[in-house]
Structure formats: structure tokens, C-alpha cells
Image 1 (cartoon, rainbow, N blue to C red):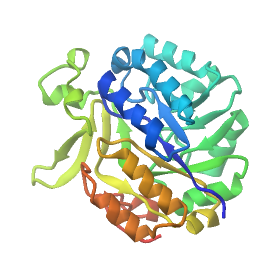
Image 2 (cartoon, helix red, strand yellow; image 1 turned 30 degrees about the horizontal axis):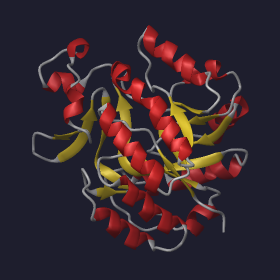
Image 3 (tube, rainbow, N blue to C red; image 1 turned 90 degrees about the horizontal axis):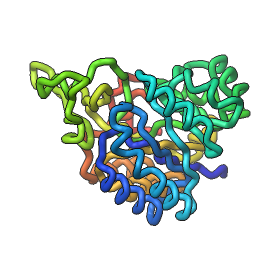
Length: 299
């Protein structure tokens, strides 16, 4: 049976440098993941806070045997943002491209496509593969069947499914966190740091709706796609992505490792995940071609 590889995606939220350092030290020592993404992908204004911490984090992860991927901004908005994107794309490490403006700067070197790129069919996938894409993580609203169809037609690249975490749905030019606190985006005072898993948003009827993270819109619920390994293998997919939340991500990785190794049944894995301190209920609707907030729970 083909081994299923686990990836830890980038942190979407505005965590302090100390929190990032503590988090990644534990990931390096304890988490059974093969690849770890680092870097700011949501808001360039946060980068002066986290940038000083990344060299030590990268060194610690690589010393722990992890492959480090440098993730780029998904919506570079300023000259500084674009300069940062160009600098990252010139690095010798593997880079995750989250905005097409990063492609020219990568200059034919290998890269990963993140879920912010619009890769909805094999034509788009093949175009990116020709430019150097080795791994493709399609947008989260694509079903498992649709991703599998692309994987079968594009065997030159590995396809990765966003399996765990609040789903990244959209990015805006407006900072929702600033607006909630009566501030402007340019003087946001980095209020997004108050909500390390994002800020839950309810409707006027008090129904759970979405979550916001600065300029980002996320699902209120937590994706928990738990496929059996032979189900993944049947579609030619061998990578699962776990997106960091403040819950015990080492335990999340251990659950998915047992699932991927065939040592735990999908329903048992979902139950184990539901016992963690999660910011929302578990869903997997998108993976099954349904609305994302629904639960199918079979794979």
C-alpha cells in the first residue's frame, strides 16, 4: 500500500513569536508529519512580528527531520508584500505559491500550490505542473472525487487534500477584525491576535455562520475529512494537509497518522478528533460534493 504523507499547513492566525516558537518546537519533536509549511499567508502587516522567529523555527524543524516549505502571501497588497514574495520565491527550499504573481519569481524551480490558487481542473493543474508544481493542494470546496479525477489525469504531480482545520474560504481588502473593534484597516492595532483560532461570526438569528481572521473568511466549523488509506490510493492521492489550530496539533497528527497507516477506522478517527478542544463542530461536506457545513462522515 502506498504510504500516505502528512503535511502541516501554514498557521493562518496572528500568533505571537513566542507562541510560534513553542508550537513548532513541539511539532519538530513530536508530530508524525513529514512536511511543515511556515510563513505568513494572510496579512502582510503581521510579517514584522513573525519574520524574526522564522529562522530559528526553520532550523529547529529541519533538525527534527521535517521538510520545510516556505509559504507565501495569498494576497500581496503592497510593495513590501511583493518584495517579500519575490525574496521567498528565490529560496532554495520548496516554496508554496498562494498567488499567481509569485510564479515568475520562482523561475522554473519546484513549488507547491496552496489552496488559495484556483486549480479546478486538469488543464490548470497541467499548466502549473509545466511551470514546476510538484504538489497541488486544490481549493477546499472541490470534492474528493473531483480532486481524484485531476490526480489520475496528472500523475506527474502529487495531490494533497485539505483534511483538517477551519476551511479558508476567501480573502478581502477589508479587515473584519478592525471593523469589529471600530478601527480602520491601516490602524488595526492587530486586534486579530485576540482570536488565535479566528473570531466566530453568527447570523442575526444566532445561527453559526463563519469565522473571520483579519482579512480572511473561514468556516465556522472544522474540516475533518478522514478517508481510509485504500480510498485515497484508489484516486492516486497520497497527501493529507492538516491546518494548525490552537488544539493539540500533535494529537491531531497522531490520529491522522494512525488513520493513514490503516491502524484506525475513519469513524474512530473522527470520534478522537471530536474529543479535542476544537473551535467548531466537525464537518466534511465539501469532500463529498455537498455544502461544506454538512457532515457525511463516511469514506
